[in-house]
Length: 80
Image 1 (cartoon, rainbow, N blue to C red):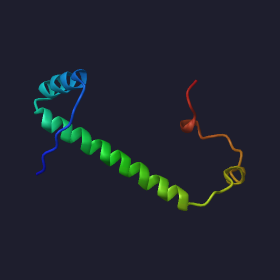
Image 2 (cartoon, rainbow, N blue to C red):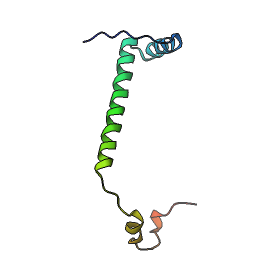
Image 3 (spheres, rainbow, N blue to C red):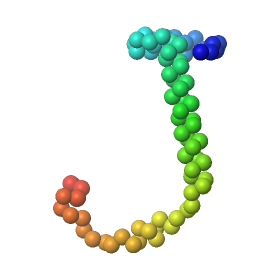
């Protein structure tokens, strides 16, 4: 395990202490969990952007035009 010293504004530190207390964890655990969540979100966003760049554009209107214009079954209707 590594040690990391960070400087936080007092308001953020106090907020973190309150949340940690409410969650029943230490501030270190709260910060570690929050950082892990943020890193995961950034990695997921990067991955999806890379996948999107490799994708090919399609004419969605042409695809949708192939769907027949029929009324939905009674149990598939949206109630008004």
